[in-house]
Length: 315
Image (spheres, rainbow, N blue to C red):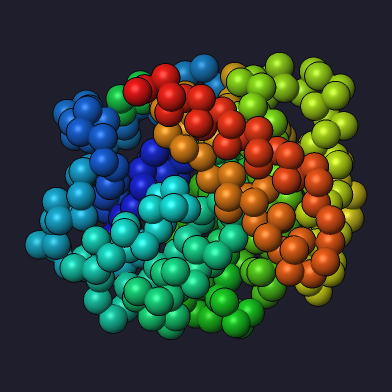
């Protein structure tokens, strides 16, 4: 299958690299020229269990650089930051045809609606992945895909031939993938995992190994997840998660101690985070359903403060 990863940062490269190893024609799109140059010149270097391996991939800084000589993209996996979704999918339009499937594996909520507005709801698949990655350098990542689950599904809950085909493609490349008949609930279950660690890692600056050794951080994480669960229940979401501790434990399962949450990785690169689409989504839904979310509201405020501090240092 011809696959393009739109937003090939650490996680996008981890997934794209595994798919390329599985024999698929993979294009990685990332705006950083140095990263793309390294990928094209030396291949993608993936570190797993302390061992580096090189995977041949093709990369471009913009969708216009993706070759269509061998046909349009069959599967577009969207992994750009939430706030870049509309611009990114609009730039990808020339690569797509009527058969192209567009799969979001982004953190947070609401991306599918943005994608559907641009490419049509009939093309869009939704999904969530517990896989992770950390950028070690240009063209070099720490991959956290082994044993990490990915769930995908049709927005209407049907189990179609095309979503089964995508799941088979991911599974065939070694990614543990299941088709969900209730992808909205699945997305909320993944949101709870992001709520557990993302903002707290960003605020503290701690990788997972150190983060999980601070009892006060664990207590705050469980409170934030409990709030999010209350909001989901108020919205009629049939969660698979029954205890906040499940999300806390799942967030770090199978990942090395040096792994960093994506929000922390964003701050370390001098970028804003996706907090509005994670903890901020909990706050917004809480307002909608009349559920108080003081812990998540405080976490959003703290992350925003760190972002502003970084911005002031740049001036």
